[in-house]
Length: 55
Image (tube, rainbow, N blue to C red; front, side):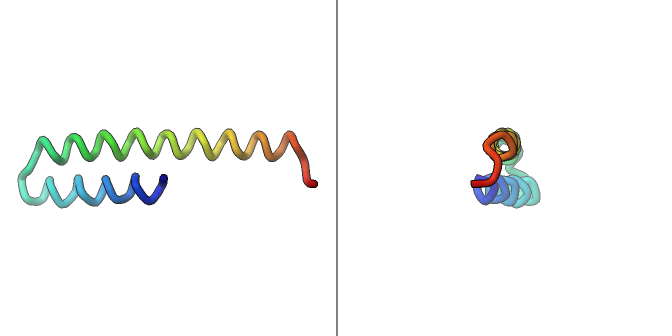
């Protein structure tokens, strides 16, 4: 998921360099959503792992 977030960020940067504002804005939005989703899932995984303990 972090990979896709970075790919959309790269697409947004390339589109912005070439002047495609709409595509850059859309790609940036998708990258932000995926990054936040990645952070939330990472935090949930850490909490669950701490609560379960080592097996």
